Length: 366
Image 1: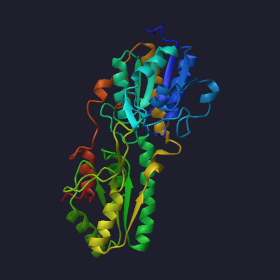
Image 2 (image 1 turned 120 degrees about the vertical axis):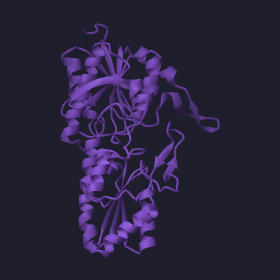
Image 3 (image 1 turned 180 degrees about the vertical axis):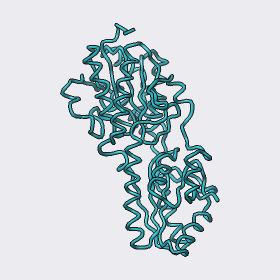
Image 4 (image 1 turned 90 degrees about the horizontal axis):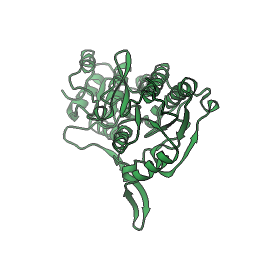
C-alpha cells in the first residue's frame, strides 16, 4: 500500500565518487516524479551539505541524459559525517556532533523520507540517523564491493573493468622489456578488485588484505618465471595488502574522516623490494582514482537503475531503515543495521581463490 504521507523525498550521495551514482539518481527521480508525483530534494555534497544546509529541488531537466555520466550531479564528500564533523576551533580542527543540524534541515526542508546512496560509512551514518527518527532507505555504493548484505554494489563492475584493462596493457610492455610490473588497485580492507581483476587479467601474483603474504614466496615466484623463460611477471596488489610480518602501508591519516586511514604505498614498497632482492627490473603503476572515474559499464547502469527504482518503492510503502540489496537475480532489501554488521571480505578458501590457484596464480602465501 502506498504511504500517502510521502510528498517530499530527499536524496544524497555520500562518501567517495563512484560510476553509477547518476544512474541511481535518475532511477529514483523518474518513478518518484512520474508514478507517485513526489518532489525530489537533492542534498548537495553528501552529508557535509546536509549539515551545512545545501540543497536544491531536482527537475526533469536535471536527470535528462545522465544515466551514462560518471561522478554525481549532486556532489559528494567523505569528510562530512554528522556525528564526527570537523570544524575550525580555537586550537585548529575540532570534531563535533552536528547531527542536530541535520535533523533541523530534514524537518525544515519538509522531507518525508531520505534516500542515501553510499558505502559502508554512509550506511553507518544512515543507521544512526534512522535511530534519531529520520525515514531512510539506503542504496549500496562502493567500488570496493565490501558490503556484506548484497551480492554486489554498483560501481564495482566498472572499477573491475578499468583495472583489468590496465593489467592487459601492462602485459605488453612488461613482455617487451622483460620487467616485473606491479599494479596497485583500490579496495581498502577488501581485496575484491585485486582478486577479480588479477584473475581476469592473468596476473601471476595477487596480493590481498585477507591473505598476508610472505616476501620469500613473492621473490621465489618472480625468479622462477624469469629463469624458466617467462621473462616478465605481473603482480596485482590491493592497497590494503600487507606482508605477514609487517603493518599495513598507509599514505596519510586525516582526522576529518571517520576512518582516518588513507591507504597507498604498498605497490611502491613491493616493487622496490622485488627490484632490490631479485635484481629484476621492476616498475610500479598505481591506478588510484582512475578506477572511480568515467562512464559506468552497462552492468552498473542497469544495477544502479534497479536499485534506484526499488528504493522509491520502499519509501512510498513506508519501509524505512532498510537498504536495497541484490541477492542472486533479484533486488530485495535488508535492514540497514544488518547490512553494516560486518564487511564483505574475500574468503581465504573461497571458490574464486581456489580457481585462481588452480590456474597457477600465487597469493604469496606458499
